[in-house]
Length: 397
Image 1 (cartoon, rainbow, N blue to C red):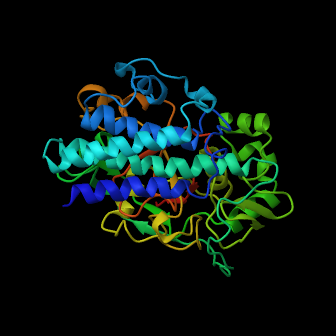
Image 2 (cartoon, helix red, strand yellow):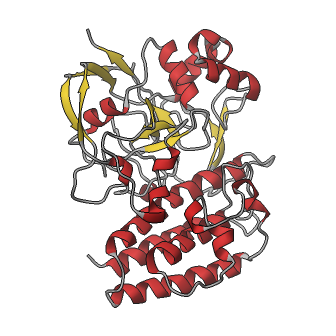
């Protein structure tokens, strides 16, 4: 494997994602959970500098500015105040990236890097490419003028979809989790046995047509469908439809404002909304074990990913990977025998195993090849600025 080529390619893609954004766009932080684009550019560089290549830092103050949540590596700017960082300039951040890139490539050629850490750095950068898109979308989509990120993204009517169907899957003792060989994040291991009852999983994700029917039936006004915390969130936030939907039958997405297409996969659903739609439908959300068992053996590269340059979900069909991250009903918790990585990298995942819900499958913002059947993503149940949707499940007697 040409590690230098892979490194350059991944780093260049992050920069390319920023090209449609102005310098002002890249500074904005519209809410505490959505980081500015400029911060993503700098933080991923800090990760390579601090945790992969080491050596004399480009600027000693950057550790305070661009450390995300690594307590063992010192103090840092409060997350909600990342948008206050008018300095360093965007040009200075770009120079920082160039300097660290040069150091990493030189260290690769000299055989001076721990390749496991380098691969983790590349996977980390790909995670931030996805976050960069979702955060930039929130920055643009919540503005009064609702500007497009890119007006040239391919679109077209997707036609009609049929009723939701379910396929039955046998229960029993099954193994889930990443195998010992190959890259995986620490929380995907160890591989272990689970006992599942027979279940049925929908052959397609929730579509806009399903959400439109839920809205028309008063779903956002009926507490019977909602978890208690979800109903309180609906009331407090005034939710009446998914994020970026408008009352005139349009929605905003990265290509701008357009009509809601009923055949499209529904996105920007919180776990609460996905769960409510499932209950209203007489179904439920799958567990993460059920989702992984159903996805086992499928090609995780088959689907609508960021590489396809649509940057929005497509037609609601049977693909289990890409388009939208699919909510499960599982709380994010350690697998039996879980061991975090040593040192500061032990803070990567394990300390967030509280108040989070597991998602599976990747999205149209994920780079192709980044996800796999065992990949575990996680967000709080009220989060909906991410590219999230759901696939329904049912019990089988």
